Image 1 (tube, helix red, strand yellow):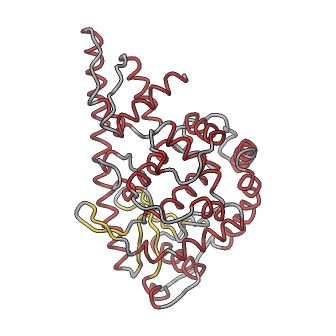
Image 2: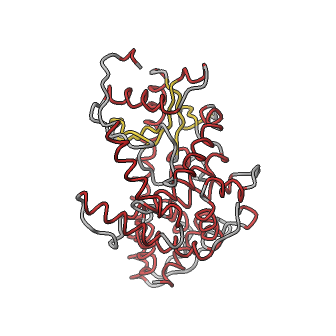
Image 3: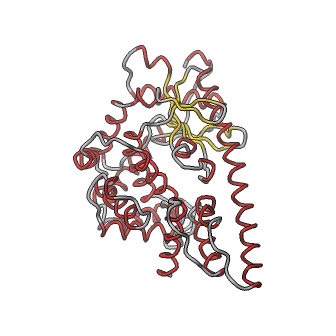
Length: 382
């Protein structure tokens, strides 16, 4: 299995670096790589290496290999079609929010895709969009006021919309799931979370005005400096929930590859925000397995934590969909046991968040009760 994953990463490096020669593999090995790429939501990305691969020798193997290429190509075209639809929905949703007097900034998703050499090769998910009332520009407002305003706005359209600490579920938009964010992300540790929210508030204006062309429209996307923090905190958070996949790490790889100026002391910044340990782990994985050059590293690599995180990723696949270690059932008790089990497993490597997670969950329970229902009769009340 270790040898197979080594071959997979060799192929992945070839897929994201055209200067590397694709290794000669058997049909069986390509099939195994297909399965891994599918679990990690990297089918279209890895296909770039398959296109340059030398077909196996022998008529029977060539025939099987040809069928695999056709099947794989069909998946790639499906991913491209979904990307076109999601991108169109992103543009329309951004325009709708503007009409409803909200500024918006696209988080992750199609915005990250813009950093890829072939944007439509990134397997799309739902739409995550950060918004704030447009009148925000007229003066300083507390984030808590904006949270109430945004929840009221969404529940005018979907009264039973579920709200959690950083986002609320928006009605499906032309077939695409949407999460409307009033906070980009969060930390379980209260002190680090407070610092993180202040960091986001300080650089918020730049994000909402960082507009980029996408397809036939224009949207606001985060800056590289924002993404270096936001995507790390997002990875960190999902590591404690259902898990993360290589797609999230590839997003971070392209953020760093496209960045030309490091304007912060990231050791200091990441330590201040509580994401230094996960940063060191990700830096090790990106340099060791993605082939990222050392001059792109933000903090010293952490091999011990990196090996642990990589094992979690390979065990669980994209967002932990294939992880069977934490199967305690889907009821309330089962979900809480799953969280505690994961906290215990992560405690050795990430103690601050592991200890804080159960405490945050209790606090979040009362936060959800407080925001469970929102009474609003008139749109102008917003």
